Image (cartoon, rainbow, N blue to C red; front, side):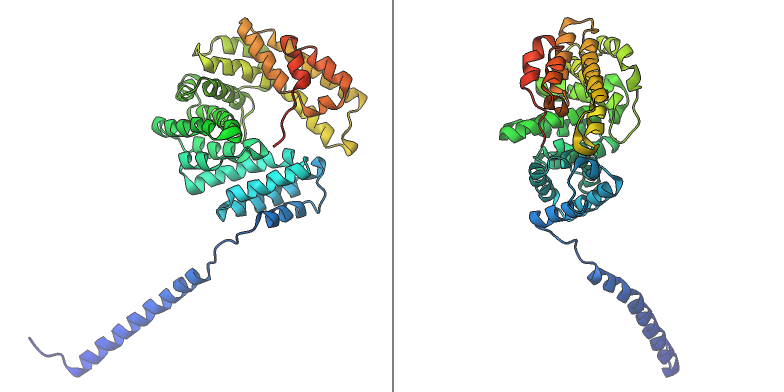
Length: 361
């Protein structure tokens, strides 16, 4: 083999040196970026509460908290906490703040949905997310958001079964776990519809829940998602519910527990207008019904009870009325005469209505 002359060797070495230098020039910024990238800060529960209160400059009235700028601020606080691995910490902060200032309850549900969806997109393990998100804070807003993200991921039947099994297992974890299991079952009904957009396929998925109450609650979630979904367009116009829901439930593709969900879901749908009025009342100064609003609330709730009576199946009437009794807006109970007028229209559930209070958590 011919020996390499000194000049050629020198040229080759210079080229190699230039190549190494270029590699280092490219590598240094990359390495530098890696070291500069710091993890998101972890805050204490008290610090998270302080941030939430600061979003509205300390004004914790419901009317202020539902404003767009406060909602955007809440989103930033909650989202950064979830990205830092503090999904449970931020919900603890919210739960403590709800106890001190209940107005935040109405303001955290929609934001919690949004952040929960992001949590699923980040972590992806639906069974683990259900198990670890063992709180009903903001009425299970984070959990429902997680299930929203799951639904939009086009889950297979096997993945849906894994979610269903984790959901039902929550009932073994004491009183709070029992509440989570019911709200999770409802959320799976929403997910069953969103992931299939077909009533037969959605009902089939609800039947994967190995528990009668869970299956009924899942059926109710289907109804809620069809008529008043979170974060998407409704499949059916809620203004037509009074005309079409009784027949829709009668043609439900399952004679078992999920059909009960159609009946209880109809009670939910029938009371939505009353809840809109409730939130309008709470956003006005002093949060007191005007005479016109009070009369309107009475009419809306009595109409909901009357619509339950339109179901051809006597069991459907009863389940629907029970649902309406559970859907009485809290503002109704601030007026004794209004409470009596609304509860008195609920037949066998009148006494239950008088005693029941919608739980804020």
